[in-house]
Length: 136
Image (cartoon, rainbow, N blue to C red):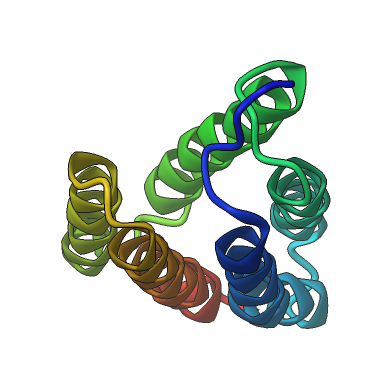
């Protein structure tokens, strides 16, 4: 049997955090008529749920990470296209990335889970910041 990256109890917490941190920018993106942004966030949400229900290395993780990378590229495109203030984005994303890196460094599952959830929170705020600053 393949070893899980996190036990089910912790992966469930990450699923819940994914739902609560990806839904606000997704729905706000729909409200602001940013359908491509919202679609990418929707794909991340679905692929994240799919991955974290049984977190092992493989195709599901690769799909999840691919959508995350597409989102980062689209965020940069949006910031450039609408000439938005990128400092807030880089500050929030940098803090999120720092939390993600910290979550990988220790073998304590509670620690890993909590820092991964913090990563989700910072990225959620970064996404909301971008969508909020796009002119209607």
